[in-house]
Length: 343
Image 1 (cartoon, rainbow, N blue to C red):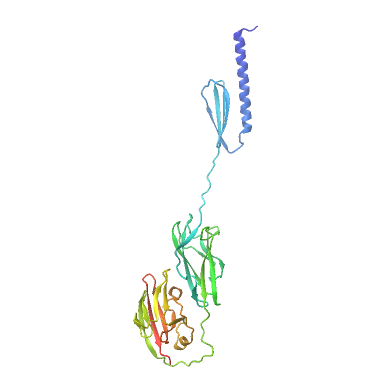
Image 2 (cartoon, one colour):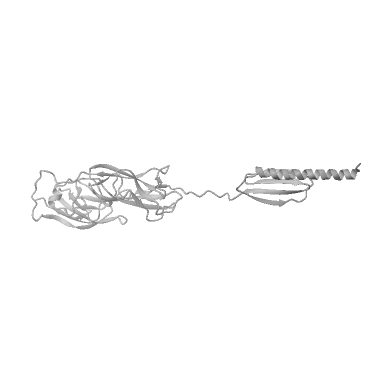
């Protein structure tokens, strides 16, 4: 019969063997609960502890298994390999600048087939820089340009503004026409202005009937038309001009004023019964006598430099006005004119 000491030693041996088997089983079983890939394992030895046991901890980003036996333990930690971060994606948005319509305000009157430059001022209100991969593109409405896409020629950073323009030609038929445009990013995704950043912006013009001599009217032009008055002048903002006598700001007899719209555009406004009509390159007395005059204002940015206008003065005399230069910033224009005597 074994003594108590021998029995105690055997008991501890059996207990140690059982704990060793339990430890081995747990290690094997732990392999089945761990992810097969995408984790990195690290091992550390614990200092002696008085309480043997098993502790398994599972956290969001790592799996930790602690096995304690016979006063010592092993910690194995598996952590995800390279979680990575989402790629930063910027947003492309725009808003209308101030002023928005730099040229050709809504309702501008044009002749059939007349060329014009439409310019908008846009602000980059997104987080993407507009570079050469961005474009101004035709979206809907009347197509009045030779280009459906106009690429950006300079970078526009977020918060900056840019004036974008496209060369257009008025339709040949009279009427009101609207052409809608948007912006396109490098992935050809369209965006615009407005609260949701998807509204188009547009140009809206009114094409007048073609100016032709009145049918059935036969007028024999004189070989040398008689000139009633002629000369040149510099008109500054709010100046009035008498085309009959060539007087600047007279008390009476003013035929035209130089005014400025809220958009900053300069216009010529006929007054006191005077009228204008866009003319051919070098209109004659015969031509200006037979065109249809209008009392509408003439938007100077919508016509090219050296454009000729036929006119009718407040005294009923025909004439030809030549726009030599237009200085919007300095707010003045240079003209020369010829007023003829009716034969």
